[in-house]
Image (tube, rainbow, N blue to C red):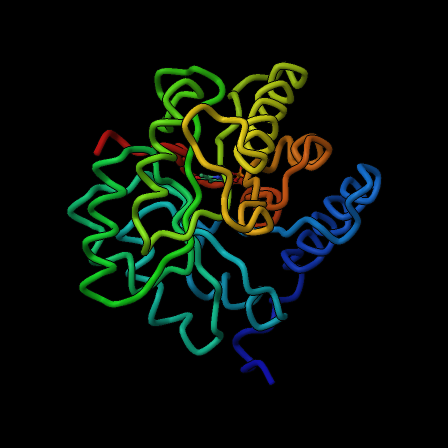
Length: 256
Ligand SMILES: *Cc1c(COP(=O)(O)O)cnc(C)c1O
């Protein structure tokens, strides 16, 4: 039973919008021949804990934070509602220790030295971590992520770190009103994932269990249906559910 304070306030449409986004994502998945194969991760940056509690109390579990400070600040206030939290922002190596206890998946591995840092810390903690490798498919200099050309080398490194469980790939789409160009980037990510899974990336062995590298995290409020049409298994949606952010918060953080 959610606490009284976890109920949506009168006139607060957050749960209606979540239901709408979930239904649209599912419709797009069904239209693409993949019914039931997309999840909605709620991007909760700048959203106060009491607003996040409303969606958690309603049964939604999957959320993502992209700033360490916010992740840490809200974690205690949400813990009793058992969120499944992914980290979706650029993570500085010196923040790894703070983040690892609070997340189930880190979606932004984009460099071998950083992956080594994760491996070392996970050995100390004696645990594993689900990870996605972030790829910069748009070529925008402002975006983090390994280039498609650099992906095989990074995956070879990740394959050597036994504490990292590679689940798939993530990208932040092209920031453009040209939806065809955005979509082409999502297609690129899917092709890379398929080649990885099938052993078609040079020097990268096909995973022992192809079923383990399945995830494609792509698509945000403005384009998630396109991303699902291109194969997204997870869309990361913030504004379409929580409303526009007062301060436009960039999806990217300054360099590590
Ligand atoms: C904020 C954010 C999103 C969601 O963006 P919206 O436009 O609010 O849907 C998705 N991915 C990342 C990495 C983000 O930082």
